[in-house]
Image (cartoon, rainbow, N blue to C red):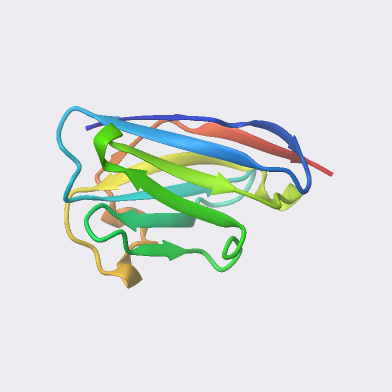
Length: 126
């Protein structure tokens, strides 16, 4: 599976961005796709994930109510709509795919994911 993330950029606080992650190489219809981020000098942290079948989602508390993850089965693409962005959202955002069924409580664990895409930088200015 190859993952291509895009959509990052520079935005002012309070603004919005939409990230995309396109998967190719094999079907992802039974997978879980997730977004993680890593800010300079900090550890990677979970942002959001969606189960391809059923659409069950999981969000980090820090982004609940501001970010929305969705998937387009026909395009094998996952989106992360980010609204009300804050300077603390500044990070490199990466998408990942898990090749197994994950219960919601496991979705935030990076070790549960099998493939990772390159990151896309999101910078939120104050």
